[in-house]
Length: 282
Image (cartoon, rainbow, N blue to C red; front, side, top):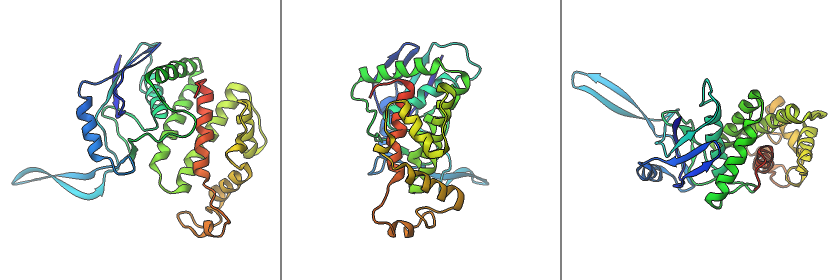
């Protein structure tokens, strides 16, 4: 089966055991379209909405001042996959592959004719764990990740695809507390994976992060003060407080000795855990 998706600004063919990924013939045209709309920080934002007007003069499109809630991008690649029959391949193997590629290349991806909401990072938004330096590494990571994912129960396959989707979607948010919510959702879902696949058990939210990272011989405290992580989580989730003040304000941060960019700090352990679950080497 062949499925188009985009937009991945990487003009290389990628081969793995279950299939291949090929740039579409109109790749260069699509790349020009994307580059023309990317801002100085490497993000592509939703276009302005339009609506149709039908009157005695005919039908015409009228622009508005409002950004579109949903928008699509041109396809960049075609996925050709040979995997077992699936009732909905886009929610199964194809969904995993494109969202894993988004993780691998530090962007967001979607099927052709499907929609994005919010901004899309076109310039790679990589963390410190996984980076693609050459085609061979990309193919090796893709092959290993797919083999690992394919061996899991269906429920865990679906859960992990959602983890990848939400991790790539953290780039949508520009307020620190908003990204923190999504990063914490990812961490909690990864913990659930650890419970189901490895039988892990923990006492409280702080212990979850420590136990999960320790399972992969990784000390989460190297990146995050877990007590601070739990304090910020409890304040935001239970009291609508962020750093002791109202979300989207600086009042709480200004009372602290130094800013604690927990949403940025969470990117590295989440990225590391995703890579460890899939058994890919940075």
